[in-house]
Amino acid sequence: MPYYEYRATDEDGNELRDVMEAAAPADVVSELAGRKFRANSVRRLKEKGFSLLGRQGKVSADDLVMFNRHLASLVKTDLPLVPGLKALSRDLGKDRLKVVIERIRKDIAGGSSLREAFSRHPGLFSPFYVNMIEAGERSGNLAGILKQLTAYMQFTLHLRKNIRDALVYPACLLAVCLAVVTLSIVMFLPFVRLWYGDMARAGLQPVPAATGWIALALWLGQRGGVAIVEIAAVVGGISALVAVCVFLARRSSAGRFHVDRIKLGIPLIGLLHKNTAMAHFCRTFGTLLTGGIPVMQALDLLQAASPNAVLMQSIRDMKSQVSEGEPIADALSARSIFPQTLVWIASVGEKRGTLDEAFLDLGEHYEKEAARSAQMIQRVLEPIIVVVMALIVLAAVGGVFIPLLRMAGMMGW
Image 1 (cartoon, helix red, strand yellow):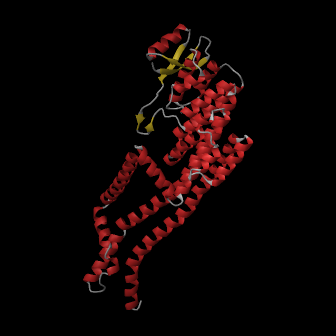
Image 2 (cartoon, rainbow, N blue to C red):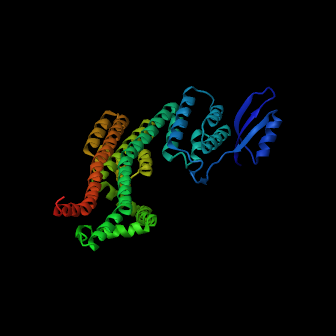
Image 3 (cartoon, rainbow, N blue to C red):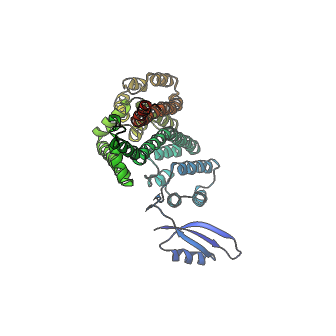
């Protein structure tokens, strides 16, 4: 049945805001009337759907971080979980998250464990998250595990934000430069072409060979906005075709492996992908080990959650070696994707019995390296884009005005 959020007042005028599961809004009103409440508003919570502004009911990473932080505080203070989850569902804003919390609360009230309640919502809570919750329940350190999960989610969110911010500016700069060049071609160069044509017909100056390519600009100018739409459609179509090809290739394990291996080999961008994959691997492995997850189970979860198919294959190979009793550092050293610094620090941590701390420290290190790689890409792309756009503008300006300056010199101006 759907869930409804309602606002009601009691006989003394005190307001109540809560969530209720019901078949229809009329049932909510009837239930409230039986409890001596007057319903002021009843709104159905949207779990999913689409609108012109995007998908409705989608839960963002920020929402999950906030939920996890509140849940950790709730467990740490040793308050009753069921009424605490009820309070959380009132405070959090997203409809889908309210519904999920209500269902988790209902499952726990019915006798389910926290792990069982969370596992019924795989769209929001990954196997990694669910296994960490189970480890916290078994060890009696659920508050500590939730704190680690909050730190891990914040790390992942921060890493994505750094990469996105570093790549957005060059992309915007490229888009602006392309827009300026396109508008110049469509609006300005056709008039220059016509001017040279008039001068040539008057016998004053032939049309320079260097500006012959501006005939294309004349055609674009005659078509006006239609040409811009057509160019945008062609570029968009090519981009969409490339995206579809990559998507289809990644649907198979072999295709995904080759695509991810190519990504790792691209200059600068490959370094960013590798540092990101290492940060995710180390932070996730360290968090799992700190939560008391056995090594083999942690490797299974790592393989399932790996963002890169090459790394996933390396973890799969590692598992076979570790299951035969080899040290984790030796299994890491046999895979070329893992840097020697990572292998050496893991070896020291394994010998000292602090492998979890070693991987958490490595995760922080590679997070900084990933941010540095993103900044390096930004610093390199900015001048390249500026130089390329400057060359295009110089070619257009030179083709138009150099013959004009020559004519002015011939006439003694």
